Length: 425
Ligand code: DGY
Image (cartoon, rainbow, N blue to C red; front, side, top):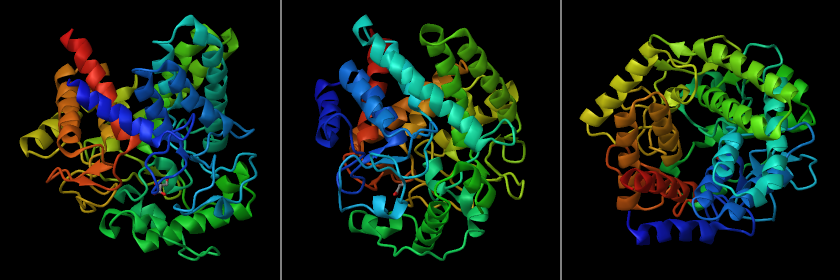
């Protein structure tokens, strides 16, 4: 891998560094985002452990007393994003949004811990405690009825805001708001690549509702019209519980190891129930109607990351990936080509995202399918080299879309490059 490519990836992280934390990209996303920063921390860990830990520490500074690590932490004011702290109306000392995002935190911490020297042990131990509190929050606040799968209460929590998976459950959310909506995102990115106005009315309806409930987790659980077991979050949480369990061997107590093992086992069982025979992939479930979302999306591959992934599921996912490669489609479209909701340029309705690809490739590798892992990594890296560190890619034309110079795309470029160099060595 050429050193100038690696230098360019590092310079994206440097340009988006706001002093101890990184914004996803300038102007469009001018604050710290939860899962973006977890990937960015891993990217930093390829060359600077101290800076990698700072990224997670900045996230932990936004952690709520109940353990939730918020989706957005508003460390410093900025005018280029909506909705800002005045819309969220939460009460944390550093202003934050009131919802969370996919829990990549423990995966990132384990990745950093594996390469950190002894001088970093106290900082890693403190972050282990933040991760433990976060996973306890997921169980308590998002699986209070003990199903073994956790729910999200807002599309923004999934990170895949406008995926066609949410079309049906989201239609239940009214479009009325008490907040004036100002689409600042459209000042930075073409409207055809972003969610629609009606989506925003529903996103903000949910924010208004939860703010009126004082962001009380149990009241939100009771009152929400949107409660979905997202396949992406459940798979990532499953993999993260495994990572936390390994970290607990170094930093936790016997009781904590047992607690993590029991959550892990429950999640593995819960994930088994999200396998969807009809579409040959894992799928999210609407917990209000009880219906499985019969939509093929890239997140449906993510249970490959976990201990729960039986041979028939592995085989089916391998066939799907082969099909994409044969059709000369850039793998893996966020919504698979041919699905009714597929739109090649609109955010999570089709475009390829480097971070999801990275996780899918790690999943194939974990399941012993090294060839598939390599194919996905090569495709991801090829697209980034060709087009740049953009937010997402059109799976049909490979065009770069959304925001430019994206931190997590640069982080993934560093991570895959490092793996390739290790293989070549
Ligand atoms: C946005 O504002 O577009 C984000 O996806 C929310 O996390």
